[in-house]
Image (cartoon, rainbow, N blue to C red; front, side, top):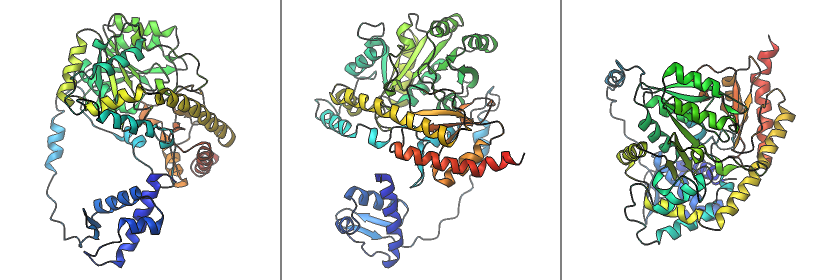
Length: 487
């Protein structure tokens, strides 16, 4: 059982036991709970913290935990209805009303209830994260001279140099002067879109695409315009048409293991995309988010678009987060020309800089022997999990179309039969004990069909994958087969 499930179960157990104690009475010590319930001290600490957050217990350092006093009647709620007018008024006269909708992002960030298999996760399962290596790196980083001082605004030069080499190789055209260190890929994408497009402007996006990027665009008052993706990535003919029709000056793409389709931009299309953007006087924001989650059987990967860009068309986003931990939020922006100063200025205004201890820890991690070992382990494990999920789906759910089996990334993209309701299936799946991601949030306009995205990286292993697909079969029989059979 994972730590998160243990904490939830212990918190539930302690809630039931609270009635034995009077308000203000001391609960058993942490040591007593560890011995009686055979859980770790960390689990006890987190469970008590959860109950304290709920107002059920009070913890006093050095004294222990006590049952909280009954809550007094809540004060009358204020009248916040005026905020509807204030928040709506800001978009009056704007071409594109600003909306902030994080629904498409939280579906892969929120932890499902205990016992629910996590096919909707966007990060590596804890068993795949290099926790020991990260802990050691953080410990070493904390002892570096000046580790707790103020870093350069652009980021540590050594870390910027590492990212530059990872983008274009040791003798490539990307240099340390072209790189800014940022706090995760989401932050980097936000900075890029704010720098490149004014409110009200169109921004071209792949269709389907990452919901978090769509949320950034809409929150910035931008208008996402879809450009279809096929098995070879974005279609250059439609990209050129979209630039001509909209006058857009930004195109956001994921050329490698695109989210959610898993497509890789074909070699012949790479120069076409750069040429089309250059002729339109536009930037290409390259979100290279899972280059380090390549599968064991992938073969040689194409270089980032930024490595072949001599004219400063590409603004590159690369990150360490997907290959490490959701809390290891270290990424980089790479760009050339005057746009780099604008990117830098926006980042400084928004966040000042990425905390230096985290940058130092990143340097320690990627420079350690544990780093290549971790990448090899993850590469082999992701291939095995991908194959396990593919086989299970073909066996249990042949109704779902799997047009492409990716050789990198952490998920599969499946098309539902015509008439199948992805919302009903998602709800039925959760009732059956498996969390899945519906396809609708990945489209900026009307989707051509229902889809699902299933993650194979956020679960415990092949056994959990098989059980999750079995539960999904039950959900399918409940939510889809009766409807289709009745037509």
